[in-house]
Length: 61
Image 1 (tube, rainbow, N blue to C red):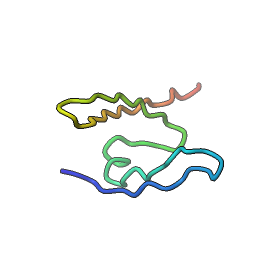
Image 2: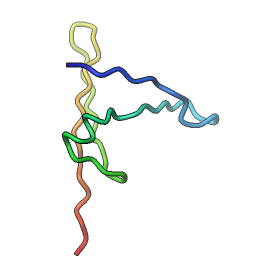
Image 3: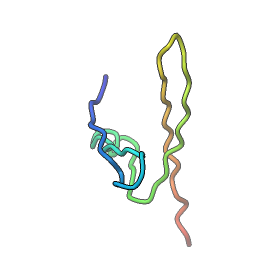
Image 4: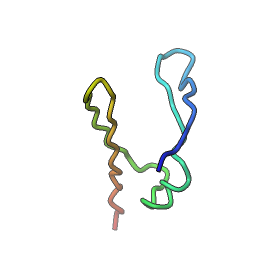
């Protein structure tokens, strides 16, 4: 299974890039605006492996 997204410039003043989280992933993990993602980067056999874990915001009571 794979998803293809396109990187775009986040801001003209920075080198940061952004992409879209595919709708299937948003639904699978019930992501909402404001949720955070924890990114872990590993290089193995010359390939970049990216692990992304959702960090859900705790609702205030």
